[in-house]
Length: 206
Image (cartoon, rainbow, N blue to C red):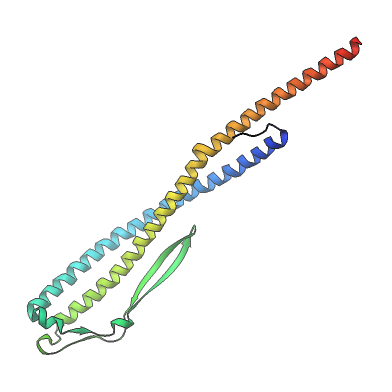
């Protein structure tokens, strides 16, 4: 940093350093809070992922049973009505400017399973449909947490870069500039004192 060594520049640089140190402390605390939230969300993700895997296994097994009972062609005659009215609702909150999904709900529309002929609706077919609806619900919840993790990690990386830039580059350079200004101003004060002293002697000699 090239700064002209004046008293005003020194005071301004010290003020800048104080502001930057406060900014670094904020970023450092933000890093810790983001890391804590990431760990909490990741714990939820692992639990939800295990539940999703179990739900998927049950849905696939129910589908295999239904295909075995009715055949693939027969099962294709089954319709799940009111799919168009099924929607996903979610509630969000902000965490250091990062939108986080707190709650995800799958709201299923009215209707049900219908069909006929070889695909007459059986308990197994209904069970298969229910499990796939549950799988869809589990997928929506898991996706919400996965999105949280993605956004939190991106914000953590941005915060980490800014904090490291302050800690490793900007603050050390500013400290060095302030130190050089202090030394230079001390030298100027000494030179001025010597000039005053020498000027006083010249007058007395005259």
